[in-house]
Length: 136
Image (cartoon, rainbow, N blue to C red; front, side, top):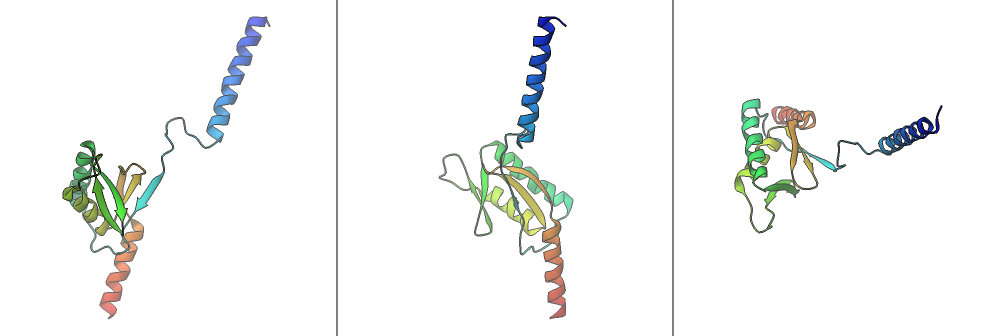
């Protein structure tokens, strides 16, 4: 083995070792390691059908593209823009519809919705509430 091929083999091993250490440390090569928050209602009022849910999801995504973000305050979605001096009723209503319709919103620290999906936890709460109402 020549000196040149020994150096190349060493460099390849060094890069491979670095990648293994990086991945093993919990960092993904395709992720910016943002924290994900999951929101769902602890008092849902209905089970939203998928068409209505998609309309609300589309409203949120469209408004996010224009700079609006969401956060939760006292169990309610609150909107904000980059100036922090206004609120948007449409994005708040869409998020509220999803949350009260047994959907879960996965949000990042920047107030951006990553995903909206049916929430089994909220659905169980809703069914329990309905059963308790019937029993009374």
